[in-house]
Image (cartoon, rainbow, N blue to C red; front, side, top):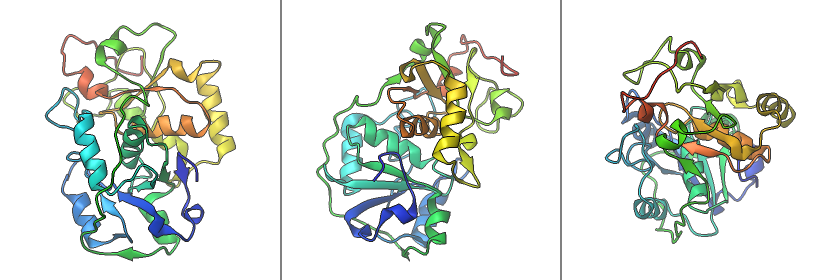
Length: 276
């Protein structure tokens, strides 16, 4: 299996040999995802909550700070993940939320993880088995060895050299500062470029590889992936852009975990509008 994306057809028949994790979530209704999971989910799947499991909201300053490695290990073991588990993560947002768990597992040193292309709608469309209620797995024995995926701080972003490309995965309207439904300040980090995560998709599913390669090639030019930093509002949807680069063999890009919500936590940091 791919270590970035997998289609329902590519999952194969041995679903019980894979760890399926449902990551559905709504920023405007944090309890919605778990309720939707209990109502119906992929058979055998367990649930991971963006706020409670994939972040440490007490850490700050961004809206979704990384959990401490010890806490992350406890969470991943609670999901039933073994050192050799093939993990498949999904949501109903084309991977925008599930990509955060993909990144966390890769950061923890676990490479056998893929985002389900098309997510929950694609699972239903494929006629794969579903169930209701609370799912569970026996505790796993995965060991978190942090650092396999690079991430950067606000200071690093502020002091980045001109050759570093900062890519913002938010919508063009939020990037330009024309609309901001979540954070108290609109705009972006000065010097950032915009690559909305939706640009990687067609009707909720990943674009064909050749189209992705053409688009990202035009965006990156001759830059190395190590010269790219990914951001968004809080270090979540940015993981989807990063996964797309990895899917294309462009490995080594960094995640700005605090992203724009962390950037504006310090009023001394400048904010740009209009994409400039």
